[in-house]
Image 1: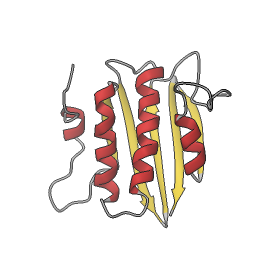
Image 2 (image 1 turned 45 degrees about the vertical axis):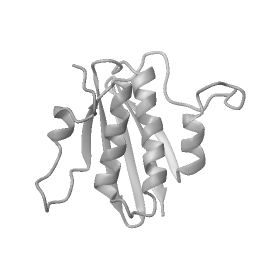
Image 3 (image 1 turned 90 degrees about the horizontal axis):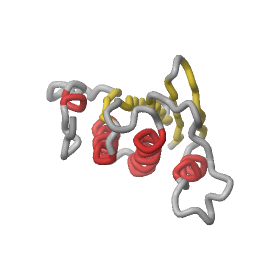
Length: 146
């Protein structure tokens, strides 16, 4: 299933009726064009005027891109993105089908590499972050205090 604008059924099923709070969770198809759906989800949950919205959007983009490029979800699988905001802390979890060969980590040669700086950004901007592997799934998470 190819979706051109990131507004496929997975995105629509998590929308709330007008006036209600947005769902903290969205599922996106693990395709490069769907990274924008995850960013849009951040803006819906946090709101355009949230003091950390831009940093959270950037970090979500990096984590979802990792899932699209490096996990077994790539192509036709799903990536689950959950954004919560309470007590001055945003917490994000990005869950995918994992990879038997690797987990998200900072590259040792990130300064000279053409790519692979995403986790460096997460490490630099997030208050805390980590990776959890359970039952064949990988969840990369971060918190950001504001």
